[in-house]
Image 1: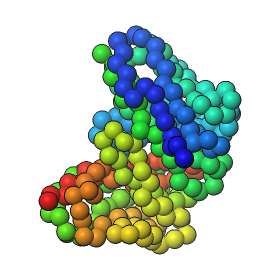
Image 2: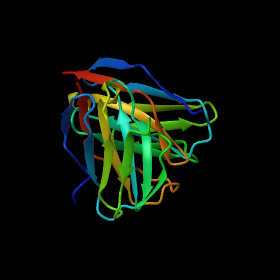
Image 3: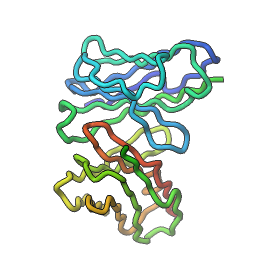
Length: 116
Length: 110
């Protein structure tokens, strides 16, 4: 079946613009994760959803970052007033299990955000 | 705070060689450790997952070991092929949050 998809794949924004990044997880997956990956670094955890509930947002770097998953499937990561340091690849992953049950996460291809 | 380190940062070897990638972590209280492969523009693919109670996992030409007490894991790739060229990342699962190393960029020369 279809894997995790993300859109857009590439986004260029001017500093100060708002952006919205979309993630379509694998159908039926309970858990959804967002990660931020800077160039040459490993991904860093941003936030976690169990169905529609955002259970952990401790990794969001500032209050300019906001994520939602209103119906427990598609998720959107919104970044307000983008800054150059927000330039990164944003990865979404989903898992069929409730987090805490050890299982692999399935990753989307990522959205590469460039802030000019 | 859990920290994950991968050495070397980059590795280039001729086709056919066996090789070892290293991953170390500072806190042994982990649920599992995973090795991923990242290809440009294609996201991350899980290769092997080792539960905290396990010592190793094998898949084809790949073998991953885990020594929790010393905070180390290795990924062994046998008979390397040009198609193995990618960045390999390890990640430890500490209470569902994956904590990642920066990766090893592997180039297999034909």
